[in-house]
Length: 241
Image (cartoon, rainbow, N blue to C red):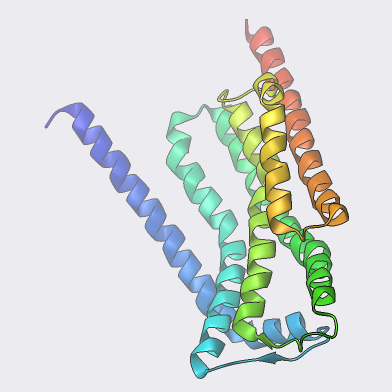
């Protein structure tokens, strides 16, 4: 077995170790979340104008698992980011390690911000629109499972989308991308973000605008932050030369 094969196997073993730690932390947070899941559920439904129904005992378990999973994902993000940092840090310089480590708290904060945007801004907007469609023609009947699936689809994606600035800053600091390449693909990025906004909002112009604008601003903020990181990197390189 040559040295290259040994190195590949060592990398896979290291990756396996990091993934096991992430999975164990996620399961631990999920188990801990079950202690408070009923309180989380009551907080989420306390302001609803309608009652939720369940069609069977298994549906209650599914809702509890879903709520606990979302809490566990949010809580495990810093740990997962740190494990990823430990995996890639041997390939980074000392300065790159410090920079990458400093991004970990921002990942958690932006994930929570994205979830909050989806829950407090997007969800009421979409739900009110859909309720007005029924008018007096239908009696609204919501099962707990269907309602929380709906909530999950409108909130969780924004948790990950809001982490875009940190990801772009990190990739810029590593030299993988730069602000000028981001500017070149701006029109394609805009197109993708507009499509995402249209897919997750009701088919009306106001809703599309209210969701599209934050996503476009998020991209532009990412480009600006990338430019700051890139310029700092160039200045440091100039000083070293």
